[in-house]
Length: 278
Image: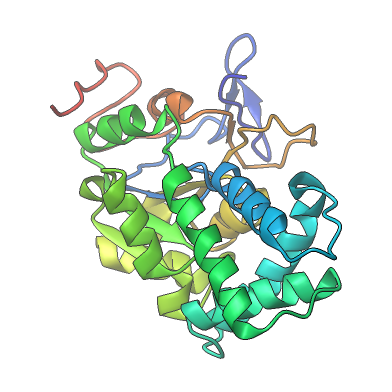
């Protein structure tokens, strides 16, 4: 799928193309914010692999349903405990332990703290081994920097852990700022986290775009905070279009979207694309 944009209202500008600004001059973009998990890094793939380690390591007596079947339950418990972390009621390490203990308790296994800690350590080690950036990430980030854009990573996860991931994968060098919900006390789609990212980049929300894999938390949250929200739909979700939200299914399509629908510091729709840094 190529980049798509569904404005409200919209005007046609040639076959198959819709203009974001209804005939007005394209909006200027000075900075880009990007989500991390499942936008830059294949978090779900590594987390599923790590969950299988936990399920396969529990004491005899638990009949595993299978990692894939238990994934929604893990996500639910994770969201519940992550909210406690953002609220300051648990630190990150305590949250990880409490989450794994609660997850196993829901499956009928009330394990002691030492056993839970050992299982969680194995899970985290497996995740660390499985972390990978998506193939489209480095070329896109290189292009964005070459285009003169300031960049921030905006995440609902732990700041220290995310910085560790970015550094271990060689991605940290691209970003001017990393903003995390755990350190800020506000998570996407709260406007506070988006506005904080803009402040740290020295830009305004109106000249900033945010890209992420969650339509609700990322694209719509950014739009509602006054930024330009862009949805990265890697899964090609069969959903009706959302007015005013551009959709791309790979970061390889982001440069073309920026060139055709926005004005960036050094690139316009009639200019040559910038050469990535080496």
